[in-house]
Amino acid sequence: MIEMNITRLYELSIILYALSVLLYFIDFLDNNRKANRVAFWLLSIVWILQTFFFIFRIVETGRFPVLSIFEGLYFYAWVLITLSLIINRFMRIDFLIFFTNILGFLVLAIHTFAPVQHQSPAVAEQLVSELLMIHITMAILAYGAFSLSFVFSLLYILQYNLLKQKKWGKRLLRIEDLAKLDHMSYVLNIIGMPMLLLGLILGVIWAYIKIEQFHWYDAKVLGSFAVLGIYSFYFYKRIVEEVQGKEIALLNIGSFLFLLINFFLFGSLSRFHFWYS
Image (cartoon, rainbow, N blue to C red; front, side, top):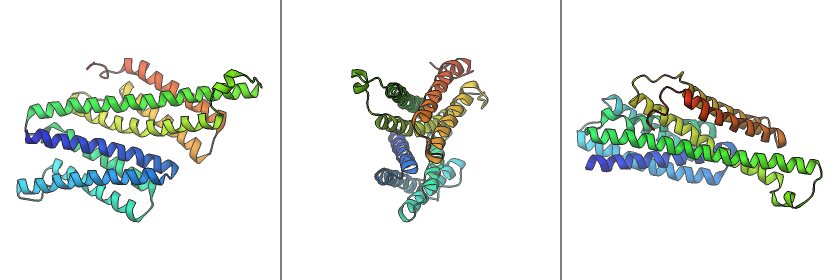
């Protein structure tokens, strides 16, 4: 019972950490100070929980818990979270903060869901099932955000063509202005991108735990990371090269179409992805 309650707090830490990474990603792209502050406080809660678990483990074992690989992973994750908070508090290095937290999330997730560290087989099995559930939920949320972003880009192209052809009418008035459509499409991609990344991290951890012959060259795995790369290219074009307007809308539409190809075609070619459904 005590172990199950502790694992629930571990899972809460993972969820809060995921939200923190999402907000740090928003700050990383848009220099959003409000998002940074909320991310900092969410990460501070994670740090408090992790520190509590660490002290509890010291009292329980009567030693500094770093002798096993999983104890070392936990301490490593705690160090990364601590360093991230210090860097965020005293310096403004958004790139370093964001990627440090991605690494910290990966390490903490491995520690939380690895079944060998749990004494009860039932608890370990339930955690693996919940890991799959969190992975699927994050992936669906990411796909939902990308889908809405795709719709906004389609509306952008429709509105752009109506204005280009000077077809004034009720249809034109019922669609939002181009700037708003472009902004909403961008914001939804900002939400979808870190969700997809964290979902992939959890999915890979689940695959390593549950599947005996997991291969990185599986069609679904390669396709999912290709989707991540394509949307990264979208952000590069938009932020670094400052591509705007119709060109970036078409790129976003193309990115979503590839996401659909990955979901339906590569998913059907995968050796394992739908075996548990």
